[in-house]
Image 1 (cartoon, rainbow, N blue to C red):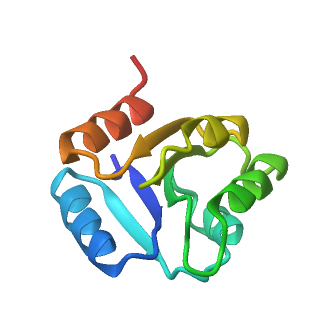
Image 2 (tube, rainbow, N blue to C red):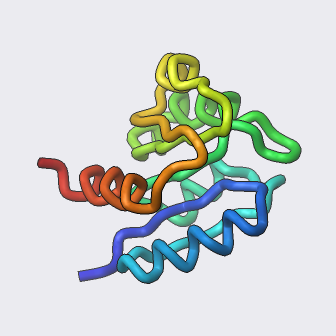
Image 3 (cartoon, rainbow, N blue to C red):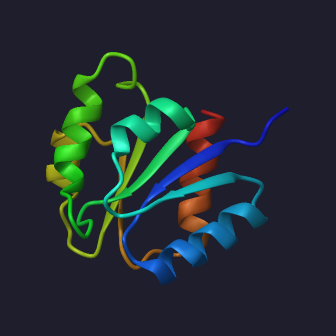
Length: 121
């Protein structure tokens, strides 16, 4: 069985490094995108189980990207975890996020969410 794949759209290099290490240790395959990457096309090519995306990327707005993903038939069903240091949970959920994580969050909280998303109860 292959490892569950997480596509990471985050512009903070330290956060990317920490998340890659944590998620790899927990048995996930992690693909990190550059902050100006075409996230919808990356979802198409990487076919992740989950997209973990920051709301505020360096050159892009995560909510706009989420709108693009949810309106594209071929990728609209990808599970999306949005995160931000600002409490924008309501806005993320209205745009179609599956779940929102307020930064800073505990690693156990993230892992629990990812595992539930991959193996629904």
